[in-house]
Image (cartoon, rainbow, N blue to C red; front, side, top):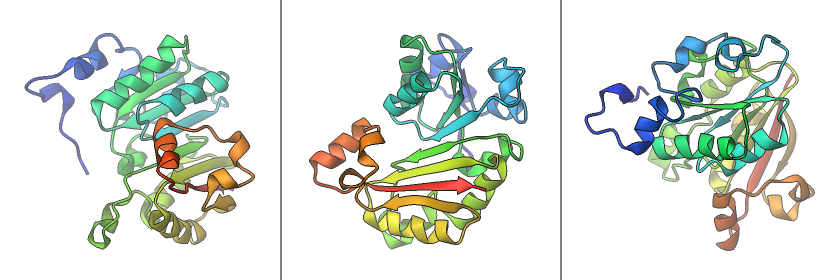
Length: 226
């Protein structure tokens, strides 16, 4: 569950160096991030108003959705967590190129959310195309687990949403079983997003476009943290 320390990497590449250089005010390593626990709005975003929504994207990928979300909702704050250095920097770079100031990124393991956030600190959460770990013996590695959903539910504010997308129908069925027995209320779900009523408002990520071209159906679930 723990990741290697960024500061002790023997040969940091340009993306690693950008965390402490070009994007030092916008990105945090695994040692810095927990220090903002309970004070992300005030200390990371310099927002005194605790009512400002703080959204989270778990696994930002190349940052297309992350940057679009930041630009589309400038009145909200957005944090992205990612383990790989290249997508971490790509994501915040896209936001900054668009002139966005309402986003930050952190290198951290999503399984350890309570180390980053206090109860009720988060607003909406997005989990798009996580590793499906298709083989049965790998299912224990899937992000969507009963314990994880309980932890996530605790750090979200009432009235917030959890939005989940996957190209794996097996993972989608697995996730829906766990959503159904979780503290969340299921607001919407479909095994074929692009043939559903939700297609018009859906932002297509780069990976999603590839999956569509391959003929794969996209599963979508929207949950409410009551």
